[in-house]
Image 1: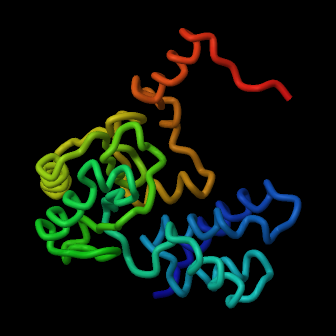
Image 2 (image 1 turned 60 degrees about the horizontal axis):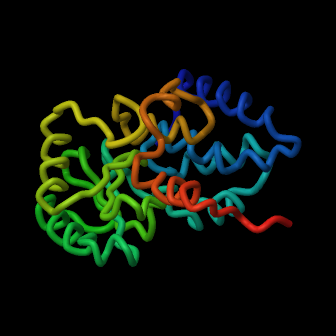
Length: 218
């Protein structure tokens, strides 16, 4: 796979905008990896070469970073990348069972995609949403308080092309490529939509205020 002139021109334009935000060019590597992932659906060989060329570094340096972070995929992710949290709290609340049943239902395992390219699955170590456990994410948007049944229904709805909305956050669920573009630092103007924190997240704050608790002063 090589980028067409039109795609190359667009990628270069976006890359230059991103690079211009950093005092040192090589500091833009992480968002540039998201940028090429937004084009290819994963960090392809051509994508790595593009990043190296734009930043004036070696391809080996790019590869070392791209293979370190799990958000950069080494093979094409599905249009909807579904992550199931199996870390301690989610696991004991049902995350392990959700993973096992969902993986069997979809027919793919960790970091694998369905033949139609619609769904890929990932075992996530933490979604940073313990107060809503067990939690899943689709293209990094939250789906809280899941069960094996709701998880399978969610994936079935995605494959059927039905409208699916995250529990919190934007009103529309973007594709994996669209999410990668946002992570590259090119916003889709949905960041301010919906609540970012639900009631369970605020219970501790309410309790502290009611009891007059304060953090120790320095």
